[in-house]
Image (tube, rainbow, N blue to C red; front, side, top):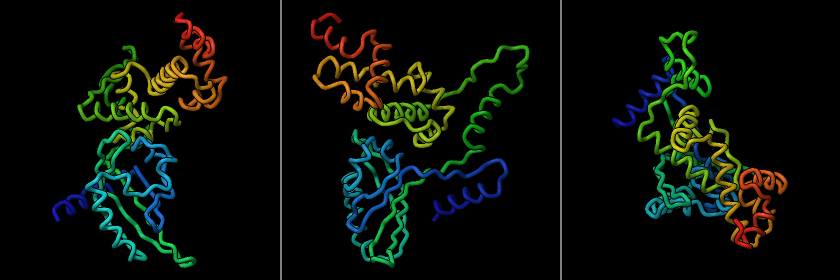
Length: 278
């Protein structure tokens, strides 16, 4: 009861305050059929769970959960199958591709079609934050706060100093792990990626430079090419397959980026590697 009262007070503050706003972000969303298999899933889910879109579709929803949460889900599922129109909230623990555990409160909605009588279940995970502003506007306010009281005309503009907490560093490292485990996938825009990690775009950019010495996009390209070099050198896969495995849309684009990074085109790189000339 106390937790519910505190939550309600946060929501109320978000509606009446002119300085703060409660921001509700959809992190994960699943549409299940009457057998409990995933029919639709949003892109953020694939990033958070480090799983391919095709590996989630048509799989039982329970397979995405930890063993303890799977048992809870199976018990609730028997009850949900008897409902035609129902809403509930259920705490569940998801398991990533690296066996990391992500606890979340899931909002579950059951609806039944009047036309064919088929039942659909929507499982949604929200992330709620209390922020002063949104998106780029919030990032600009962070910069303005760091330069307040300074004469910007007399001083050279400096990169704003941001103090990264242990939690900030953990989130940025989690983002790096997502990139490493999904090199073949398109990178979501940085605002969406930051929201998935529970931070903002400004901290994500700043923190990535501080921890890894480069931008998020450059880091992604570097790791794609590093993996590609390993596949070119130690496998017999054709270059089109390798390009697709590391997220390049075409072989010419892949070859150009590879040559800029390693001085040789993939074909010559493989030949020199076989002769021990690298």
